Amino acid sequence: AAAYANQLRTIALMLLRPFDSAPANVARIEAEWETLAVRVVERNAKARWLHEQLSDLPLELPEMREGDAIWRYTITAPTIALTRRIMHGLQRAGLSGSGLYYPLSALFGKKHRLTNCLVNLWVDATTTEDHLRRTVEVIRAALG
Image (cartoon, rainbow, N blue to C red; front, side, top):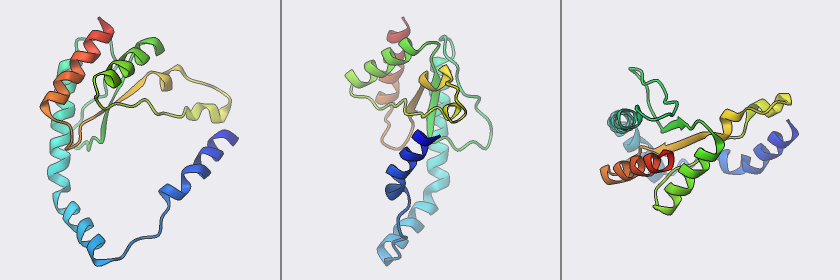
């Protein structure tokens, strides 16, 4: 718990900032709110495509449900070694991905293998069809 509390204190200043009420910032927030539904549909479509492309691999894939708003598509590799192979492959290819999960079970004195096997895949507006295709190629090669 102490390690987690220290981590939260370290990032608190980045997370907790005073609201910027400048007209330009308020306008930006309003504009982004207006496009939120469209962005969610686009992200979900990319996540569904990844789901279809990866469904035959020995990965745990998240359940896709109606009404989801997917921020990152998170897969679970069967081992820590395969997770690292996927992450190194993505990095070498210049593709986005992360495995940044602090195991909350550590708060209770337990560690869970799962937190070391998670890989976040980007599905935001910066993620092109080519990016998605290459991501699948890297994951397949890592598991191959």
